[in-house]
Amino acid sequence: MLLKTFGWSFAITVLGLIAAVFYGGWTAFGVVAILAVLEISLSFDNAVVNAGVLKKMNAFWQKIFLTVGVLIAVFGMRLVFPVVIVAITAKMGPVEAVNLAFNDKDRYQQLVTDAHPAIAAFGGMFLLMIFLDFIFEDRDIQWLRWIERPLAKLGKVDMLSVCIALIVLLITSFTFATHAHQHGGAHVDKAQTVLIAGIAGLITYLVVGGLSGFFEDRLEEQEEREHEEEEAAARSGKDRSAVKLAGQAAFFMFLYLEVLDASFSFDGVIGAFAITNDIVMMALGLGIGAMYVRSLTVYLVRQGTLDDYVYLEHGAHYAIGALAVILMVTIQYQINEVITGLVGVVLIAWSFWSSVRRNRALAAAEGAAGEHTEAHSRV
Image 1: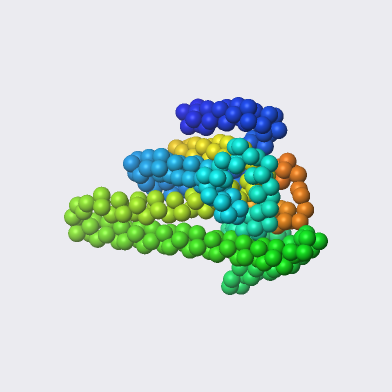
Image 2: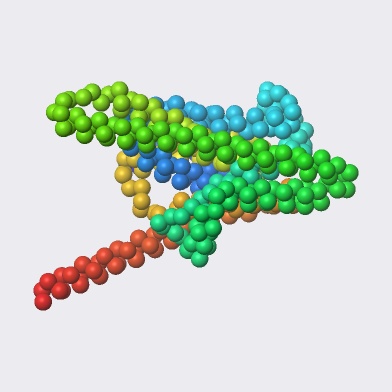
């Protein structure tokens, strides 16, 4: 079962890591491995959400999502999108950006470094909004209750996450950016660059979130309509054709999943810029990670166990929040790539262990309750 589901992912991992060693030695091997783990850890909740929706779709639409969807996710978002980011921020054509990445690494690195404040501000704001919207939502299951409970109460204030994100952006643009570049005499321009890029990141998040919400609402309306028509058909004794409605519902599911998947892969790509500016290592690492996310989605659908480790989603979002802070800080200060990568891994591992402990405690409590009931029945 595991080999059948994860076989392609294992094969891509071996090929990707071998390519990394040939490309940049053991340093590249380490960076690509960290990027793959980062992508998996950031996208675990994406796999869970995908699996929850995917299991409602028939075999045909599942294949469409896992073929067309993977092409969009792996080749579109993980391979093409980083080139587009570099091309836009460095003001050059995509072909020239790719050519520089392979043939003039020093100049390419310099161009990316010059564009780093804009990339960091854009990505930092996008990631920060994902984290804030998660942490301000009132949830039945809470991991770090001493943090999440009071923040969930604060989250009832309308547009609070947007306000906090804009305050963080203002502070960053007029402290980090200004201080970092005041000696060059262009501190106002850099502050404006950070401010504009950060606002663009916020707008991007709001647009993607709005589209996801739109498709989700349409999906819920479709499901309600189907349920009502099924009840009406049952009462009248008619055999209605469900093919067209099921197709419509599946189509909206597919659109919703594509927007959702794009938003999650976007944060993986942006997070990768906190690890490395090398587009080849970025493509290798994120490509490996994306394959595991796809395999994990299939595995969760086939196993049907989406709720075993309930704190993993929390750990993934805390990792996103940590990456957002790191990206904003790197506008002024350099942070070691290994430290950046390990922050996410540690948070995911911690949330996984907390989930395991919770499951053990619940199992022990159920066992004790069962023994108590049995003893009571004997009496």
